[in-house]
Length: 223
Image (cartoon, rainbow, N blue to C red; front, side, top):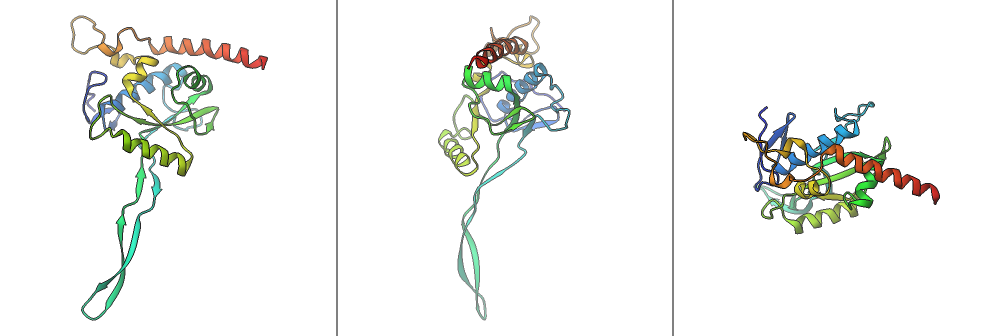
């Protein structure tokens, strides 16, 4: 399957594919590439743990947040009136972009140091579980913050799940730039993309996490 190349943060809702997965937008593909490199340094480069549970899911589950609203009415036929129902409001559903898992040390670093992914859902295999909705830098038709804010509150109220909002370009600045997105394509001279200049690699980022977690555990012992 053809792999498209875009400038990180490029404007637009563009169908994009990678690893036989077709994404709804370039931003979703960017987040997936970030996740791929993060899992490589974690050690789960095949995206599956030894027990066969996937480390991530993309558009895998839809949540029913509210049932449809129906009313009864009488439908007049030739010889009688028949009672029937019709929907006056459609059901409300929400499908997260990604559900993924992080080992404890990464979960702590993201939450306490970077204020990213502040709330995990459950703990599975000592991994924290997260829901992510990927957004672009640009507003517009497909990036309605007011609608998304309402959906987040409804999901939290009805399911107890927190939906993390992720803008890939902003995420890269706080963590690392995926090597697959770092350099411009088809250039005679190796040239870093504007949004990746000076950003650490996944390996460098993982080293920071290890050092922070080591200090965290040392201090936790004293309490």
